[in-house]
Each structure stands twice: as structure tokens, then as C-alpha cells.
Length: 264
Image (tube, rainbow, N blue to C red; front, top):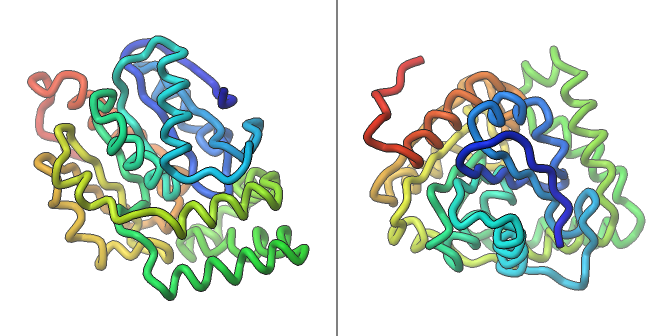
């Protein structure tokens, strides 16, 4: 069973962290979300306090999320995933669509790695296998944030780094292999019977919002937000806007007839 935290009451909202994070990356936004929802924040396999039992594909991680929700007696939830957590959310939606009230894709994509990206990941795996874990994590972390944010909010970068540095070699390698192997999930969007939310950062170096705009219209119902002051970590860089957007989306998923047009 995955390690997880559960907070609040009401309809279920599952927060799936990205790489190389764990459930603690959500700590600043959980209280506001839990005022309205039952918020479940698991550690994915190989992260935080969830052990890694051999090679895990994203489909295997989706099975573990389903098992956790069944353990908690939850039949349906909004699944919100950041980056790799978004890949996992779509794997979950492919395998357990009947348990999905909505999917929130936070700085994430439905598209698979191209060959250049796969080769970059393979080089990172080789670096990690040769003792470069800490160097890799310390070098990648600042690039996940918008330049202006990184220059003015060092405490947030340090918070992110303190979480990322906890992931051990086997967890990092497993995540990269799982991301390399992930399939194209655009068909999940095209066939979605649930709403899909897209949160994009204008300064995201990982998921270029310009190249991914086509994804944002594949599902029958889409919510799209562009965060002008964010990079790849929108939930850390603009947390108040993130909470507002995710709450509004979750409200729509729970009671679409009660939602009014959203305005900032």
C-alpha cells in the first residue's frame, strides 16, 4: 500500500506529485483545498515513504492509486497530477475511467517522449548510476521555476530541493524508465467522459505551452489556465491562483449545474 496523507472532508481530490517529489510538495496548498474536499496525497512508488518493489510502469502506479482508493472506500475522485503525476493520472483514467470525476493536468502533457527526450533521460540514468544523483537534482531544480521567481523566492526553491533530494537512485531511475516507456495518451483525452483541466506556465522549460495548446481542445470539456508568472511549478509559484482554479474545476466536476462562469 502506498504511503499517503488524507485531510478534510467532502468529495475526493487526489494529488499526484511530480518527479522527483513526494506528497510534501503539496503542503502549502492542501489546507485550502481540504476546507472543501477530502484531499488524498500519496507518495508514488519509490518516492517519499512508498517503497519501490521492482520496476514500475505508469500503468502499475495507476493500479496502486486504484488500490488505495478502494482501500479508502472511494469510488470516484478528481485526479490532479503535476508533471509525471499527470502522466500517471492519464494512465489511471485509461484503466479506471469509471473512478474518474475529472483530471487536472498541472504542467503536464498527454504526449509521449520524442527520441531526443528519451535519449536525454537515458543519459541521466547513466549519470545517476555513476553516483551523480545529488548533482543532477541540484542542477535541475532552479530550471523548473520562472527566472524571476527563482531570483526572488529562494526559500521556495530550497523547499522544493529539500523534497527532491530525498528521492534515492533506484526511485529516480525507475521514474525515468517509466516516463521513457509511457504511451501516447491523447486517445484518453479524445474518449474522456470527464472534464479535463490544463494548468500551464508561460515560462515552463519542460512543457512548452505553445507546443501543447492542441492538447487542450481534445476532450469534450476543457478548462485551460495560463500562469504568466510561472515555470514548471505553477502550484508553488502561484499557489493562490492554483487553489482557486483547482477548486473551481473540482466544483464543476462535483456539481456542474451549480458552477458560474469563472472570473479572476
